[in-house]
Length: 137
Image (cartoon, rainbow, N blue to C red; front, top):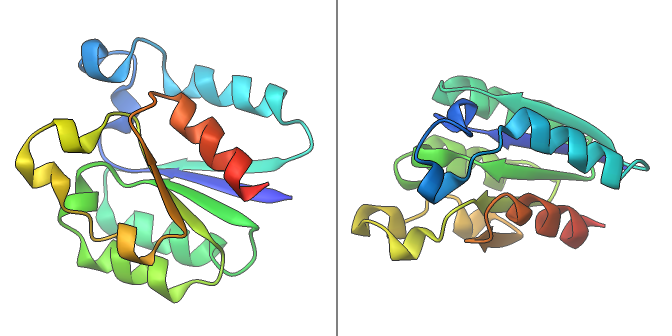
C-alpha cells in the first residue's frame, strides 16, 4: 500500500510555530514514528510553501497511490486550484488539520478541499494523520 502525505505552508515550522496550537514535535520526528507504526505501508512525504508545487504533487501521486493525506494549511481556505486538483485525481484524499479549524478564526471555517475529499479529520493534533491512515487502510 502506498500513501502520500502532503503538507502545505508553514507546516515545516511544526515544533516551533505556536506550540500551544500545533504542539512541540516536528513533523519529521512524527513521520518517523508513523513509518515505524505502519511498516507495511510505503509512505511518501512532501511539504511546500508554494501552492503550485502542492498541486503538482497531488497530480503526481493522485492516479497511482492508494491514498493521499493532505494538510494544505492556509491554502485550504483560499485555493480553488488545490480543491480542483483533489477533485481531478482518482486516489482518495483525506483532508487533515492538526487544529480544530472551526474553533479558530472565521476565515478558517471555509475549505475549498472538503467537498472533493473522501473525508476530513481535524482537531486531534498530529494524531489526525494516524486517523487518516487508518481510514485509508
